[in-house]
Length: 228
Image (cartoon, rainbow, N blue to C red):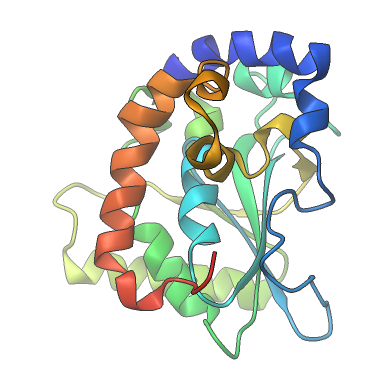
């Protein structure tokens, strides 16, 4: 698995102090957006391959309050990246999205999610292979489950993909925030110097994440957050 192999260097650097550089709060890096307010905002949990990629897309959207990378769907409480990347815990790499439903409804977020990754490849996104990279929507109640089912049915009927959609709809369990060096990863990569990028999986970011984010920003330019 490409990302799992390339991240080994970053993990060692994090032990030496890089984690401190990345850590800036509960939802790392999103200082331009207001803090999450449970009385006003809502949460959505999705998995679409590498969480660096999914996080980078949703961070750009207007109406998004906070985005957090984590793990969910497995049987092991509080797993580490090393445990999840082995593909034996049952967890997926997920993003926890806090959003303002008055600005961007959950329907739209799920439609964007379903059209910015490949939901037809089982346990795989590009070079990343394993159940931890599965396409999934996680729900916390019957309403969220029904919404996910409806959006998947809509996408299937629209015929956007020639192959069957394999996105799973799963109850949210054992969600764990990922390590600090995973948080806000691609935004930090974009802002980093050439020297700093050498320790940030620059090959993976340039080859996998950058083209995906660039395509998303072009397609959804009118819906991007202003000012950061």
